[in-house]
Image (tube, rainbow, N blue to C red; front, side):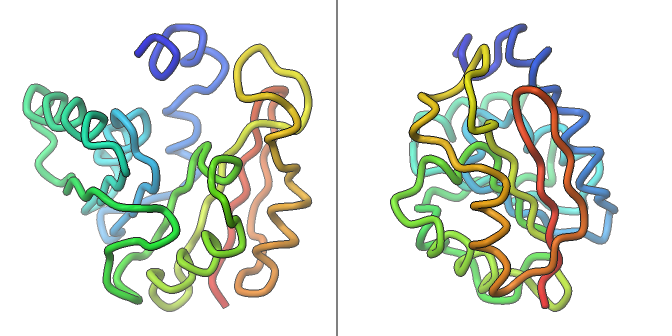
Amino acid sequence: MERLEGSERRTLIPPERIVESLKLSKRDRLLDIGAGTGYLSLPASKHAGRVIALDVQLEMLRVLAEKIASNGARNIDLVRGEALSVPVVANSVSHVLAAFVYHEVSDPDMLIAECYRVLGLRGHLTIVDFQKRETPIGPPVEERSSPEDVMSSASRYFDLVERQETDVFYSLRFRKR
């Protein structure tokens, strides 16, 4: 849990900064792929009308359910499922967030295609992941993808709207064509 939510992570990867960059409104329905314990789902729920927190691990969703109960966030739906086969209806969300997931999936192009499928007209996709270099936290460098790799994969379906980078992570926000 310390690795996922500890003070070092919060300093290096501030959840509020990432959520602000999404530019959400109460009209938005956000799908958080790989939501884990709600590191980004909970702060996003203060800005979006609805948040769908998707994770493959039941234990992560249990922890998030406890946080929701104590936090009172009533606009978060928990969904167990795979990032490459999202159990969400096509064209049903306005924003997809895939934070620190891209480097984890076996087929990043399929992840991008699945995000395209669930997004409504002119919807947004934000991919946040670790820089492809040594950083104080994160997976081995050889498991990471560069922002350019992600942009190349997404270019088939999306236009890049915004690119932000820190020493530790990058955030790429795209708009569906």
